[in-house]
Amino acid sequence: MSGHGEFILRLAPAHATIVRMDNASEENADEQGGIRDRVSRARVREIVDRRMDANATNLEHSHEFDARLMILEGQMTVTSEGDERIYRTGDTFAMTAGCRHTERSEAEGARYLAGRRYRQGTAS
Image (cartoon, rainbow, N blue to C red):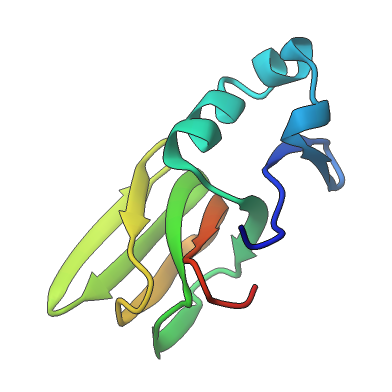
């Protein structure tokens, strides 16, 4: 086992607080709209609240972790292997470690939760 704990995210208006899942109460999980259940089912080891500025582009890259994203605000266009997909508020999608892709936001930018699952033997 890699030493990563499982986490859920408790959102607050001005910041985000990361809480260990094994210490989270059922009440907190309910407040998160079922995030605890989703994280547990996906075997995600950490979750982060991220933002993309308006009209931003992240050039082609890959990650050392499997990712599962949920768009909270705005929209994001992801292009991989010539396939372009637009994800809007409420949409979720997954990407495997090593998958090369670009990310682009539109005029309103984007805010999303990104669950990360590090594969055995990779550093966090």
